[in-house]
Image (cartoon, rainbow, N blue to C red; front, side, top):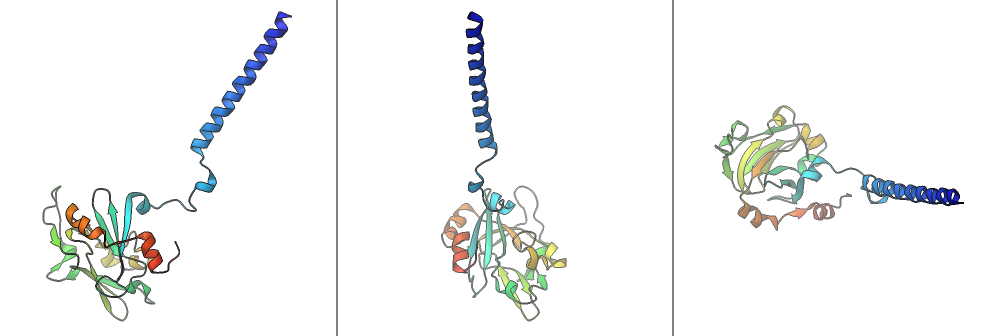
Length: 202
């Protein structure tokens, strides 16, 4: 009689232990495999993960749309937004020239942690000229700050502006002072505001 009760107790204990394990496995699965309905349709890009996207529309001239990707450390990547007039022309950009103003931006060499030799520019300072088959357009800094580098790869591969303007085809990297950034930030568009303004689907 006693052995039967012990057997039943053992079976009950095993059943309870199995339920606990199942519960733990379900919890682990929930943590490792989130609800598919809550996942985005596509994984975020490196830009979306590491930068906050801002846009400026019609900067100084109609259809001169540019992006500013700002990193948490304050660095700002500057480039042509998808709706920039140069990218909407049939053949797109055919050449880029960093020799604007009084200096060739591509010959600037910034060194050390203190970014020695960095030039300080205003938001309306020219960064480069991008050429199409018919004309050229001036691309500007968009933010006041130090110019740390330009993407001189574009000199030999201007087609990157047509195929990957938001990544490999970026124009330059700027470092604005926190105070200057705070002044301009309110005038910039978020990605959602930019997409809505230009009637683009996300």
